[in-house]
Amino acid sequence: MRPALSILLPVRDGATTLPACLDSIRAQTWADFELLAIDDHSQDASVLLLERAARQDPRVRLLRNPGRGLVDALNLGLEQARGDLVARMDADDIMHPERLALQAEYLRRHPGVALAGARVKLFPEGIVQAGYREYVRWQNGLLTPEQIAQDIYVEAPFAHPAVTFRRRAVIAAGGYRQGPFPEDYELWLRLHQRGERMAKLPQTLLYWRESAGRTSRQDPRYLRTAFDRLRADYLARDPLLRARREALVFWGAGRKTRRRCTHLIQHGFAPQAWIDIDPRKIGNRVQGAWVVAPAWLRREPKPLVLVYVANHGARDLIAAQLQALGYRKGADFLCVG
Image (cartoon, rainbow, N blue to C red; front, side):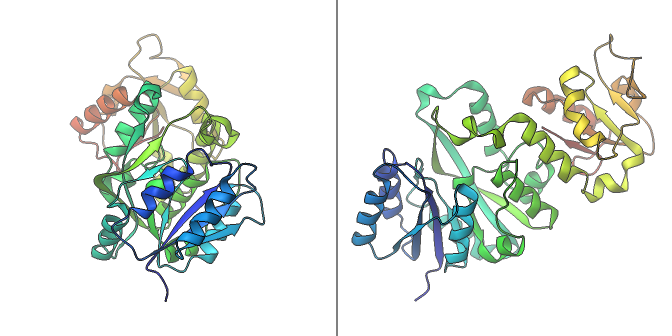
């Protein structure tokens, strides 16, 4: 009998944290699942732990990655999954006991939503740095499909191991892609571009382990420049930008901001003006366009503003200022990470 849900758990040298992860899966109140544990050429005791789990629980299927790396492992899991729903999980994280039940029920009640995430909590508390804490605070604040769509170009709006999605939607989008970019954020952007709705449950359903060995800290696909290039690639295809490319304005004329904007400019989306509040920058020309004060935006028709200021607090203040001028988020301005 086919299970309703498949859990995709790629594992590579995860023996230290895998027992706690597996315990949290066994503790789920939703029992109608299969666990696809995909070994990605582990050199530690991970395979022994997974073989034992498979002997103890017939819902556990141990697969061997014939390729190499996370994307190959995930696509193998997608191919082998028998459930209509797919929940992602990582070997160093812990599920809340109600995670699968709540996400499956949400997707049942919202047939127009392709993916449901959840709020997450970082642990262990003592080693979580301020920047990552702020990122999770921002991410946890995005719940509705509208909020997620409006801020999709800021950062990845989901913790990958906290999402459950409809398998058919991700298969139709082409599965996971290899490339010099974070595979999860690229998938969220691709689903967004295809018009798929994504949401997040307000409950904290995943405990997201922080560690110095986290892939995002070591793999070049997760460098800032990789995110900048990826965002620019998808912004250049966004119908909103393509319709208003002649009336495009970038907020932020500092050196770091200009460097990040370069990727989009190289796609042929040059701004007609740069907005800045620094009086030393106002009146300068940058790549052929004037740097002007925010008051310049009091005009009709409104230009499309891309807010490239990266600081979360400053970005919120700029968004409030734009809204006070009558600019609508997602229609007249977008925030870009």
